[in-house]
Length: 320
Ligand SMILES: CC(C)(COP(=O)(O)OP(=O)(O)OC[C@H]1O[C@@H](n2cnc3c(N)ncnc32)[C@H](O)[C@@H]1OP(=O)(O)O)[C@@H](O)C(=O)NCCC(=O)NCCS
Image (cartoon, rainbow, N blue to C red; front, side):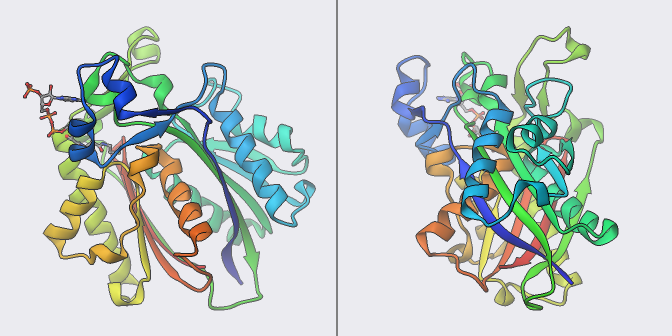
């Protein structure tokens, strides 16, 4: 038995905000943002469009694309750092909205590494609980949690959602989740390097702050080491990998990573230009886009890696 990614769908809010749009309301420029991050534009959810709404839209697209009856879904797992409320979970709202009436549902928060954590949890629950179908959703509205007068953070983020049908399968022994690897480091300096301040600790006020330069360094160090470790553990090298899909925070981080660690740039999928940093949705958005373009194909072996607030990070190897 293998755990496979059977189908993927994504959803982006309609509203697109370009760097030029931002430069009309902030002391910034397209040139500054693009050269430092590779971002040109981002999708931004409307005020009344919540994380679960994005997740529902992506899930409904997935149901339309696949032949799955919602009643056959065993679990709905949602990765989000920007849930509509403290509780109930986005997962329960999505479960109800799509009629997955037999599924259990819960949220996870592993920030920008949430997709890799979600993949690992889906894989292990399918194996340990003998599940058939898991709906793994990433639903993020980080633009609701940034200070739109703070040019050093607000330009970096966008909103979006992904939905994946993760399935147990005995059909094709060569495809499936080959390996996942998760890490965390909550020591003070790293813990405080990316923070969303809005919560009881801060009187429910405040926005997202980031020690940009430190996070840049941590991202290169930790994503690179997780890639090297997961490959070594599976007796693989980058020659065995067709495409590397990293968390799409910032093109410059990825280019520096390739340069410093001698990774093959041509295998890196980079989609920061049109999406900006959509947290745990960034890998599903990149994967879906490149599958639809025909760049990534069935049978390809993919290496995912991501790092986010916590710090948390990880890697996964999947054959489609
Ligand atoms: C955020 C980031 C792009 C900033 O780039 P940087 O080169 O480190 O820039 P700095 O923060 O040192 O700021 C340099 C100058 O640009 C200014 N600046 C910051 N944001 C700006 C903006 N949007 N437009 C114009 N100028 C800006 C700063 O005020 C500073 O000006 P000063 O020198 O007069 O004080 C970079 O640190 C980065 O990419 N970090 C990783 C962020 C990330 O992707 N995190 C998510 C991981 S999940």
